[in-house]
Image (cartoon, rainbow, N blue to C red):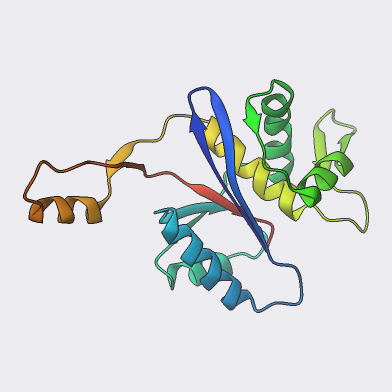
Length: 177
């Protein structure tokens, strides 16, 4: 299981975190760990692939995180991520498995002319998939800014002028189940 967290900084897209758990693992335990990390980033809504059907949505919901399936397929995410990467807009973290998986991706054109991107046989792309989904989702538009409810509550009890912290209410992809 993998998770990637990213944000936009002006026209730059910044990858903040990659979390990966490789088999063997307890899926429920990993979801609990990922949900705890998401809480540290004040994230309560994620987007992810459709690999495991309804299970991720239900598992994350038990930890107070809304899981929404991504609209785009893995191939569509990779194809949208490529120009972000090639233009230098995407700032990635130094992660050897990410680099290896990105470099191993293969682009194929079907008879109908449609491109698909996937890992080679007997290889993995879990980390690359999560990162591509995160970066593409962040690139797709400006997220609405909201004041986190905990900040509002603290400000009601503050004696001085409250300091507001704006927190984006956006989807952060979790991918490759």
